[in-house]
Length: 270
Length: 256
Image 1: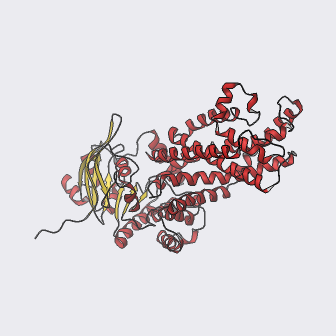
Image 2: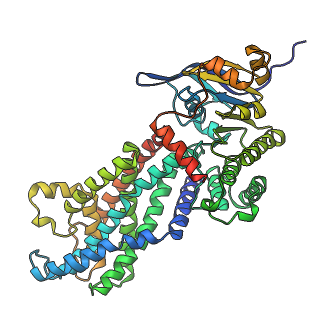
Image 3: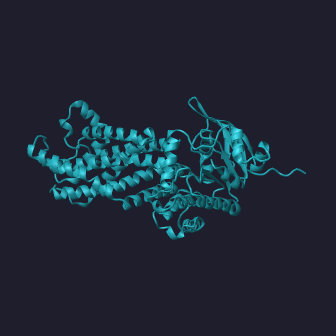
């Protein structure tokens, strides 16, 4: 008897996005099973951020379909937003507010109020390990603390799916591992599906159950890290897989705006 | 409806908290009205070149300078929005299920509260210069309402511009280009009757004209308004509603 198929949290079919003549995403078809940590890899301009923006309803696709938590992103964007959390690449916690105020703002915009909101905020601060500094302005936090706060903020309303765009960019190794541990905890304790983009092959290898490598807007390959490495060779690491399927070396480049934003983020991280 | 109000209040609450922590901008913004009232106003009061009836020129222009102060402060609100976009804060707000119009209204309400604080600063300057202010409850409430709605209008207008230009550099250029024509094509420092016909036509379509007109009779002893209060507030609220609808439509584009 065949095993029943795993429930799908995220699915795209022939998803495309064009900006004038430039094709940022070209007929991407993906399926992410519920409860998985899924990594999107690719050189700059491969279409990772475009994909995440379409899936989080920030951007409309030119053609194709995408469903998140069972809802079509184009037809039911509000239902999608109720069920997702999002951590952008930039450090988006408001530095002029405290951790409590940042969390309360997110909670209130997700319809949480009163005792329920206070309880979630308390839990979120404990999850992020920020109880002791909860009333300090976020601009006084380290980069790792801000990232933990942002993950807590994005998961305050207990979403089914969490999207993270380069979540550990610019963090030191200890802060990076703390973020990984928080993500694993979310999957383990809440069964959350996590989709993240990363340039960090060590991160992809350590964290992700499945990976997809994008190249020039197209899906180059998808599979488990072990299966992908086996496809390239017996001694292959994910770096080799990346180079093999994307034909690109791993670098943090991008256009002028990407570089400015990345530098701003790293500067804010101190 | 309740959810809409709660979402707007959440955004406004966060904005006001930020403002209370860094009030320096409020005081730096007070410099300009001080200069206009203390220098321009005092000198033109002596010249008597602008017919203002029984009013001293300084008294006549005080409501105009209050409106100008609101305009100049609110019109640069878009810079903060672009900054939020560059930091990813806009993206995070837009991924919540909150209505886009509630997010935009929350920003406008915060600007309205900021305008009230700014009005208090201009009142202090006006008192120091012995402007003949009406200290009656109803007129003061009308001034507060006018300042609040005016701030909402110009901050939302600024947000619309920010959504179109999307970069700080371009916004600064456009902000400078817009403020002075809005100011001079209004009744802030001279009556509508003194304007050439073409400028008067422009002034009729300028929301600042209605704000100044509503403030003039409510703020100053002996001040007279050209339009009925209902007309001025009706026009301002209609302009605000239009801008709000436009801003709610354009705001999601900031994340693209």
